[in-house]
Length: 505
Image: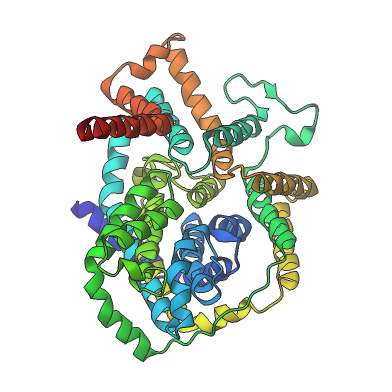
């Protein structure tokens, strides 16, 4: 424990270096811009801006990328409250009471409550990561190939069973990701797979090209089709409004604590920030004495979803750091970044890359503090960006995407593949197929396959290796429960309904 505190202090000494502080501020500003632009989103922003970090050290790069992530989390609330347009999916619940508050002339109070609640949720999750991640990583060092595969199995099954998306579409997207991830050289046998004679495919699809295309280009095409235009309320925040709102917020400490717990639970499981924000809002509306006022400009209706969403978004990094399994699409993109920088995500990070992992955790603390200061002081500037026509913004983002894709290997073929992935992403979004399971499969598919084959080689082909001890059996069983959770929960609800009818009779 004391060693961890010492490592964290060392992480802070890395983060507060002037170069890293500048990157932190740049990352927060870029992230807020990404969050303010509706539809672009944290995962898209991190994917598009990932090539900017290629020339940096891994620690500086992860500080900047994680700050883009925090900034995007903060930025989503601005459009929700001022324009009634959620910048991010998890900000939808914030519009229910945030926009009515803005219409009543309380935009400053709503924004202050949203930003402060976001900060509290993220801080709670970061403290949890600081305390829990080293323990989980230490435990995970005992894992063999069968245990490692069981963790991947649990992650894939959780995406299928616990996601809000239809299971069939999630499985279909995941299968496509597995297929794309297997293109190129087979690491075990040395055979070529699905290259169809194209030399450019010998090394497979680069993860970054796929992510920029799927997330960035796909979203831009969709937004251009929808032809967004923005009309919103003006924002005025001054020190008096901030202090006045801060004096009120401690009254809602139990609401904040409950929202933090909901967010952390939903973030560690792959359910994510969006269901966490809706669940927290729904429970707050049901329990609050002023529940009838929800939807008419109640400050509790802003605190609950924002706290839960940030707690979920931050805690999604816990399984990525400690196990190498991302808990959200953005965490999946960050995990891809670690691979590009030559780092192996997972428990070994805590022993082999202490500077990196504790620098990342320290940057979570500092990034959120800097983020809160930046958004509280610069809201009018960020809101003004929405008044620039999207026809001007879209080509700029497209150029950034193309430059980012080209700089991966200095190859125009990558730019072509990025456009192909963009069109695929556009049609997947149009037909409501989720992108996150596909990205997860591209990133983790080959690693899951490798550990699966190693397990079978060690057991001479027996699948019993995945139930050979208590640990691997427990994780595999949890995976199966997660996979069939919709059926289990529906059966349980039906049994309770039948029992209730019998009692009433």
